[in-house]
Length: 212
Image 1 (cartoon, rainbow, N blue to C red):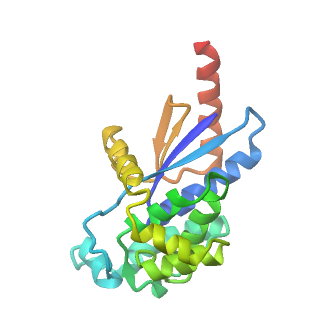
Image 2: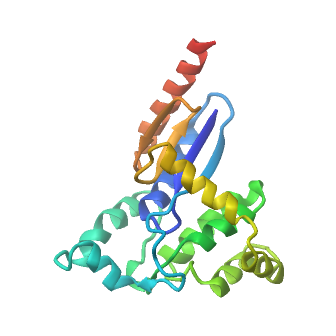
């Protein structure tokens, strides 16, 4: 079974949805699963250096919504599956293009490790995952050669691939993430619980068998 996941590295619900998917796969007893991650930009207009986080979030609520309104639900949902969110440590809302390029430059067998590292760096440690130097450090912490990664990120390597993936999301009508597609047949949006994901996985398998 192929599961395609559209996500953004600055999306708390994408981090939660990824963990829910992991828990669902751990319970799955059907055919082997291949998970493919694809770029989605929640906001590709953020400046490369990022935007101050608190004012950026306040603007999303028209200046009338307390910041904790945005943070409470993902904080509680994350805690339920072992994920910590330290929103108070975040200083910048990042432009996520470079972080998605870093993922694209990662060998497929280590891609999930890199995605998890980026989520932790941003949501737990408050690091600016839109900053080149920070991304190089994150890559080095995960076993990559710092100078090589820096040179690749300073080039245009993987940029076309990332942009194409984001454009594909638009062509598919994806307007929010996480967004999951199962065997190119069934799809849903949002960080659904593991039991829901398992049910859709079974439905996708049944659909595949019926189509044969």
